[in-house]
Image 1 (cartoon, rainbow, N blue to C red):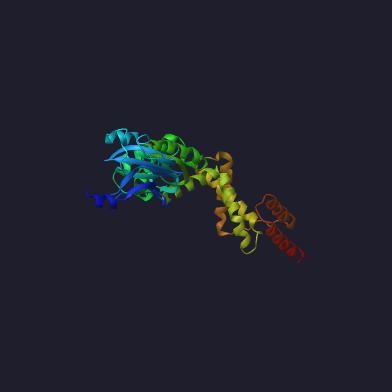
Image 2: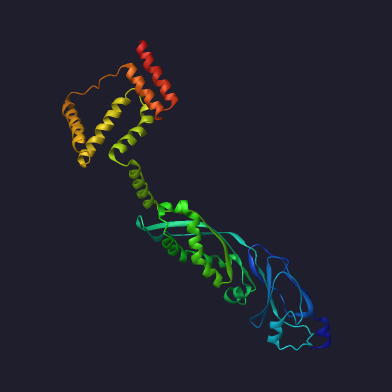
Length: 349
């Protein structure tokens, strides 16, 4: 190098990373043909780390603070370059800055339903979605395993890798957690901890720390969800008698809106009981009592050629039944008042 070239050559006195953009995990300081001034300073801000790399080998790692670059503070680099104690010349080295702050709000999810073993339903195909947060915890390992000689690494560069890591461990974590699907909504924290335990070693191997992992929703594909809803409905019914009552209760708002209001509700309740009894006989569940009810229903059907006219209740009986429905919460106060007014109007004639 000529004297003129030496004079024109720029030396770096201060190394720092001031433009820490969101989502950037690693940034290489642009050296070009410049050299680092011996005795210069390295400024590492909070939530940052800096690494000196010599010919692809990680040398010295620095945490937050202001560091003077001399042989005492660069022991590994000094050894790799075979510097003696009197070395005071500018030197070359690659310098990488790392962001060690949390990268929050990272979304994960199952693009396709995954199959897991469930103790209630056997094999279940389900989907899950949530959020997680991570950070660079070991810059040396992150550089070696992920960054290589790239000038910059962003969160987006790792999305595919991290999503694959989560999904690869998801089925095993859910299966090993022992939480049935029906209890997952109430045990999302427990399930999230189980998944986090499964995927933490994979994050550690990349120099990352998994700071949080959350499940926002767990669901079944639509056909399975419909089948589950029917099973839950049957479980809520409990037996045929309860199911008939459940159906009748659902019919009350519809009857109130039809012609005649709730006046014919007694006949509807009788019909519902007869249907429930007949179903019980067909399944062998009602035995003698159900058989008697079914016989009554069959007798009524035999006389179908002459339409049966239900016995008319007295106004007092109708009002008593109506009040009973109101007390049990099966009709609203407005329904009660309207039907009561109708009965009294007919009574006044």
